[in-house]
Image 1: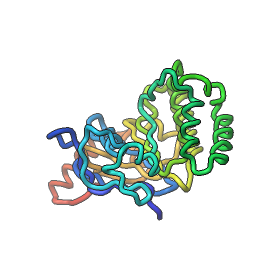
Image 2: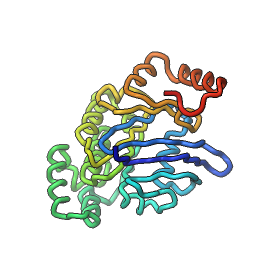
Image 3: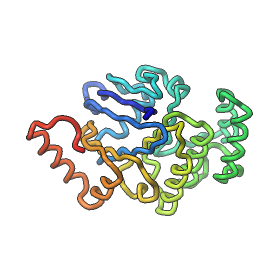
Length: 254
């Protein structure tokens, strides 16, 4: 099994505040993993640290297809194969989606193949009509997320981090985005979806689910974990972790 994203003993925080307290995580190529947890658990901090948001300090390692990205500038992380889909996609006035795509073409390994991919995905996702419009300007929440999936499809990164892509969407848009993510599943890419809720997972087939509490991944397992969360919430898992720590057990609850 080849690993797309390998995070080892990653600690991070802001100033004197430690938020991530030793995160270990592996996402193999070809798999879709979900990272779930309540507000304040550290999920978004993990995303920010992996993508290089500079106000955070970080120690430990995070490898993308074998390349250590901690300490790299943001643009170098992107070239190493990292891609982020934002919880709240940014509106970029004055820059058309087609112009953004043209900039992506400049760094493509094979521009001709890139052009074919753009044409194919623009037709498949219905993005042709948005190419001359400023990025995300005047789009609905679902349209913004579809634009992000279009950018993901043409970028073909090694690791895609999808930060709460279900945020602010109605149920039909959640289903559409989930189906788009599944359609982009590739043996050349690992996907990490960060989410609070299990609803998006009803419409896709995550290979593994990880639960984060208080800056650590405390449980990892199959899709059945989402069903448990629906039934009992995070409190039950929190009690299991506390009980395991009282017994002197080490590592995450599996």
